[in-house]
Length: 263
Image (tube, rainbow, N blue to C red; front, side, top):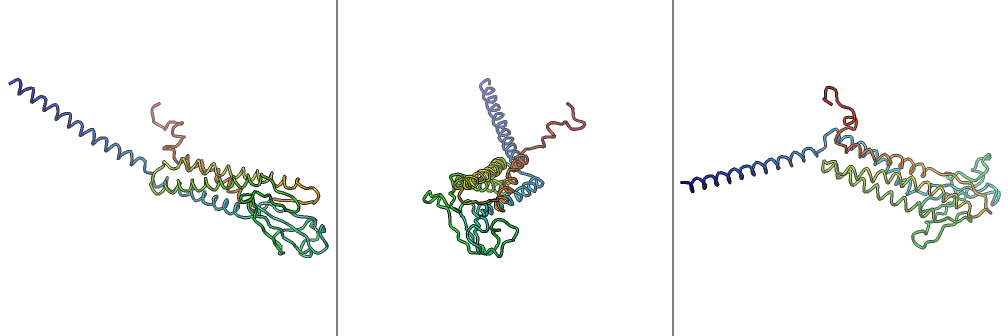
């Protein structure tokens, strides 16, 4: 009789443990599913991410336009340096430089230097050989320096970070999760900082170009490509906005208690 009693107790205990384990597994599955549901972003959050991503795409487009064009700096000689019929003006960027010969009758009489570069004239453009043969370019008997190469490398790194940030945002929107917002914010913010540093380094390279040879008087001014890149850097530096979107609740809700809630 006692043996039957202990056997029955043992079987009942095993059944109880098995039942409890089944409930635990079921509860765990429900918890995992609930966690997955909580990770899914809401429609309002998705709309905010798309709006911020659109602004980032605008910044990326402006950065690509500025980096790919050769209107970063314009160099102008005095009008009557060569002869009484033509003068020369140059414009260059990170990869390419152009020298344009303009007729003097097209230039404003009150302008002391040649230009602007928008006027029609004979143009001779060449690509820089920084990455191929390591040679520096010569513009108006003035030689470029290594700062121009450094500015180009920083611009390339910035474009690479922009591409990585865009990939992260696309994956966040396609998967419907907020995990990729943090690396996206880091990539966009870093790309904006890098492209702004590239503009500063390029400006110093222009000053170094002018100081390389004082025999030819040349004036300079930064052109519209620098404006595009600078605006893109300002827009992309706000990539930390994606990080704010990844916060599960508003920071104000953490700092300030809600009305009617107990302290």
